[in-house]
Image 1 (cartoon, one colour):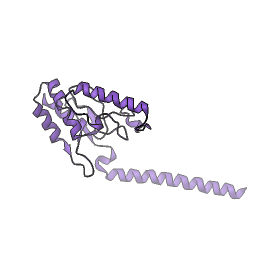
Image 2: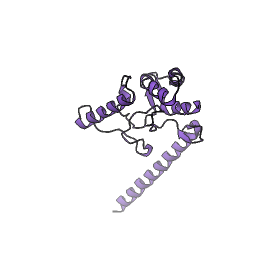
Image 3: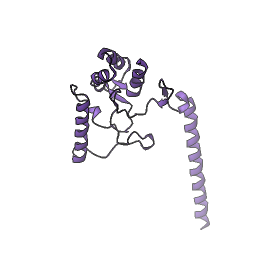
Image 4: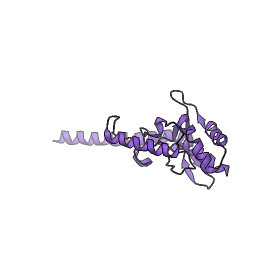
Length: 180
């Protein structure tokens, strides 16, 4: 019996030490990360601050719209859905997104990332094609020249070495707000 108590105490001590060391290691690594591991923030013209790499919901016609989110853009509950491409409920949801997108952007081709959620539900980026498909709507809603809105998209184009070119929706929308 004494043998098991000593083993239990050793195991508990080992677990506590490893847990504390692991947390301290992560804390130390965060201190050398950009912005001390606190995430990069972007400030809009009103002084509001947002995390640059967390997807935000934009549903007004004057803004670029983000990908849909399986977690309703809740950063504390990041995750996708378990619905697959053959799930009737999922297909119905995608069809609703297609209808909504086509209603708001009638002359545009629907980009796949505008009607499907990302794996995390918090992707801050959309593809170049998805952004360009929204330019006419935004220009009309803001009373701007289409070329001006298109230039905002092009100026926010990020390089992606393994996939399509992408743009950060939040940064583009903040740039739009600075125009007027």
